[in-house]
Length: 72
Image (cartoon, rainbow, N blue to C red; front, side, top):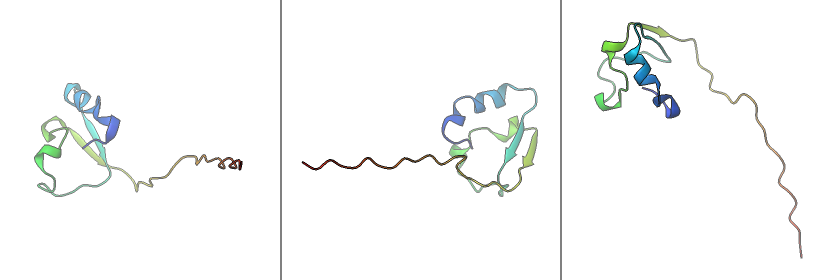
């Protein structure tokens, strides 16, 4: 399954490539997901690699103070 904009080209490229290697966050048992949720069928996948622990973090937090309200 792909998230957000990754669904634009990734499923098409996976079906067009000679070899498709998938890096996954977690390997789950067959039947865990509804078949309609799967974006690239297993027939197109040649290799599966489970990636290291994924830490989902913001690379750089950018915030600015709110401007002071003017009182009239």
